[in-house]
Length: 429
Image: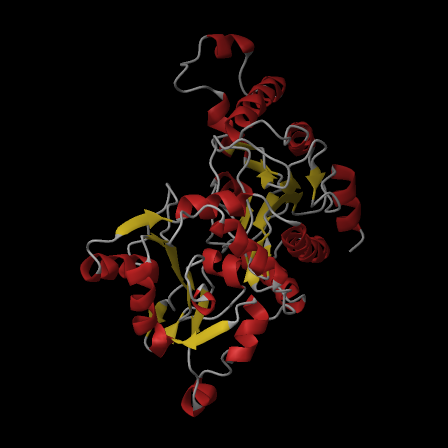
């Protein structure tokens, strides 16, 4: 890991939050992410599973956490199982956590090697009245490959068929939604690194550079500042490509007169940031580009004020679409008469704004939480309105990360977004 070691009190508190939801005599088991096969004898770079990291701070593969908070033997209430290193592993793969390091990182006193898991788990399971197992319950995403947690569920069903199995995911969702101050500080650092990358890009972009060169400048700044890397695959989209919402080819040349939409964010200590900025390749917005850009910016500024306790993403989306509809009419994209005659199932506003305004962000860039979740202080969401007009070669999105509060706190307020700011910074090259 590139970031300094975090205070284990964060992970101790996180475990206590989860334990409060458990019924008596429960057993929780959470696995680390697998190492993901790439090709030949290679793995993709390892990224820890968000739930295991949230509960332990351990950033290493082949790790298992068990929680059995009511066990009569206090030593068995929290156990962390890790790889037992040896000389060959040290030579070929590098350093692995020692028991002492794992304890210091997680705050868990009972550290065992993986070779002890089967016998220990059996002892825990026999005394448990309910087992809470952890699965990915993202309603929009189901990988084709089974996770370690999913494989473990199948194993438990065979070996302990009479046991009651419960879902841990609903509890993990509830505790991860609200960020405590240490988490917020980590996300602030991710945002600060992202700001440095945008500053670098403003000095670099000009007609003739390629999208992948812009991506390389961002990557350089991320790694230089101790980020793990990108929190997600960056979108570096010039011209009409900016109208493709998840464009990630990043292989075209940035042309004079085009806009460049960049959706990117640093990941720091496994916490994500998510920023979008749209700039003119040649450093100067055309009159039409400026009109469209300032329309999006007006909507964004208003929408940020709505990220307050008691509302939901669905309500925010409805309000933003009404504002954007007004802006679309001013921009001449359609008329009020067109709106009155539109198909209610296919509103005109969605033609030029097909996505939503907000999503939760934290350990995952699209973090736990749903559009119907009632917002509370301490939750963090993105705010990202946009306008996409393929026939005019215009795609604009502006996005900041915001803490829900009676007076919302914009974590990216210092990243330039005004037309004048952007033009002045680009002209200073």
